[in-house]
Amino acid sequence: MPDRLERAPTLQTARLELRAHRADNLEACTRLWADPLVTRHTTGRPLSRQEVWTRLLRHPGHWALLGFGYWLAFERASGQFVGELGVARFERDVMRARPDVAGLPEAGWVLSPPAHGKGYAHEAMTAVLAWRDEHVPGPGTFCLIHPDNAPSLRLAAKLGFSAQGEVGEPDARLLLLTR
Image (tube, rainbow, N blue to C red; front, side, top):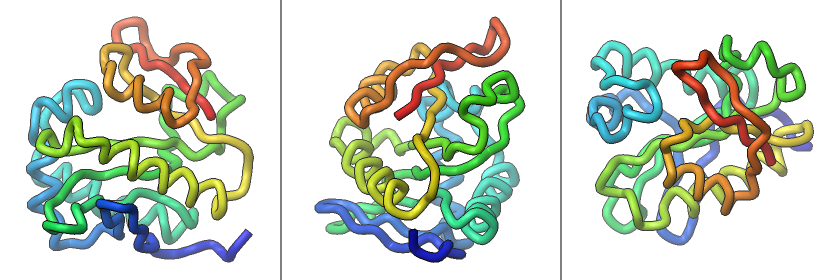
């Protein structure tokens, strides 16, 4: 395995560039996380600018401490912001009941509504997971998806994830998928 990275490397796909978070991405990220279509199956509510700033700051920390994390995705042709995606270790309380996946990277993707339906999530996550498999030691990756989020469940299946059960409180269940 290569040495641990302290900053997100730039990845390119046929149509996208994935790169590290920067302070000047705050406005694009704020628009993303303020959109109710984006947050209905993730945070459950639009996020404030301050909350988005805190999220933006934590992503470089993942890279510095763990050697992996999230990227921002942009269209290569236009430079248009597409979304945030990657692998992380969020140490979610809800995962304490699942020691079988403790320490595994958690995959995630959140795309802005104008980017939905274009195959960008599949394209980007294919690159992210290939990068993960080459650079992050250990077996497997998991993701958590709201059971009503049919597009993400379809994408997860295309990426090779399979359902392993549910986690969370009865009124806030998430599907646990692994690959």
